[in-house]
Every structure is written in C-alpha cells, then in structure tokens.
Image (tube, rainbow, N blue to C red; front, side, top):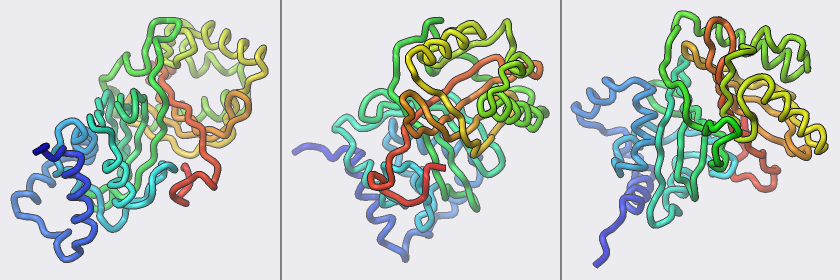
Length: 290
C-alpha cells in the first residue's frame, strides 16, 4: 500500500483545522511556550520551510478565522491555502528562504520556490496577536543569470544599520517617486551609487550604464516600464522593499516588487519581481493585489 504523502496529510489537517471550531483554539501549554519563543520572522520562515520538512505545526501560525489573501490566484482564507496544497504535484512544493525581514507587524521574504516549476518570489505577511492574518506576494519564473552573471537570488544577505531603517525607507520612497514615477533622471545619481550598483534583474547589467542600455532597448522596441502608484515601503536596516503598480512591456498591468540594499545613503544593489495582475474575471478572491 502506498504511503500517504505529507501534502495529503497537510490537506487533511487543514480541513479538520478549519471545520472543527471547538478544537481549533486548543493548544497545550508546551505549544504556547514554543510559539511565544518564536519571533514573527521565525514563524514565517518556519511556515515556508514546512514545504520542505512536512512539519504541520506552522499552519497554527495562521489565524484560522481571518486570513486575507492577496494572491489573486488563490481563494481567501485557510481553505484557499489548503486547496493549493491539495493540488500540489506528487513531489510537493519546495521553498528556500534567501532573505527574511521584519517591519513592525509585517514580515517580508525573498524566496526561491519550486512551485509548479522554479520561481522567484517576494512574500509579505501581516500579523495580529501573534498570528498571520494577511498575505501578499509577487512571483515570476526563474531565469538564467543576467548580463553581469548575477542571479535573482545571490548577493548580500546580512542585515545591518538597523538604526537607519526609517532613513533608508525615506530615501527609497523618494527615489521611486522622483525617478521611477516622475522621470527625474537628473536625480538618479543622488539615490543610486554611480560606481557601485549591483543589478539582479534578469535582463539588466550592473551599473548605471547597464540600466541605461536596458531602458534604451525597451524604447527601441516600443516597450514601456511605468511606475504609476507606490503602495507600500517596508524596510529593515539596509534593505528596503517597495510594492508598486504600473505598466510593463506592451502595456500589461503589473505589480512591481523591488528590493534595494542601501550603503552610505545610496542604493548599491537591486532585486525585483514583476508580475502581471490578472483581470477581475480571472481572480479567485476580491481582496485586490495590494
């Protein structure tokens, strides 16, 4: 007889977890102590790592009655999450958390997934009373290294300059609003280090020359890259994530998630994920992308 995979067990557990209202809040004193010892960031990392380990404990970090889902391809609540798990391929999903950060009640991660194929993604989780109650993400296919040989995941990971978090968030916010949204390219070198700028976008080389060449190529092809609205700015120390809305390529409606590393008050490294926002009739929830 075939053994039951952890994916099946997790789907069953989710069903029971959501249906048995009289039992879903019962925890042993040991479990409470363990939960209290974990930071919000640690809970998120444990949840994502459960794809690899089969550990069902981290499911308890999600609020069973309030889980607002902004991935528009997934239904709302734990039931929607469970449906994704239930339809996983036989080998299951995998997740390698490359970077994890916390900004107040929000945790954001940069993760390499095997999720119906290799994917690069940013996830954002919001906590209330120690449980995850809301989730946003942006995901794209993994590509070959860019012209400078950099991947979507490599580069610096160490979090430093915690005392500069708010200043770095303000710097990146101003960069997005002035340069990316309003096209004030004369201000570019105020925000981006002109001699030390490492680029992880799949199609762009290092430095301002690489960025300029990519933009010129897009213009020649009649392609666009427009940032129209800045929704969130999250940061921890020398890393800042922005979540924006705009148009890309032939005018597709997209979400831009950009991760910047700051050093000496300038941007020195950049990772991003661009994902097309589905039309309303193709969405599985009504919570909006942002």
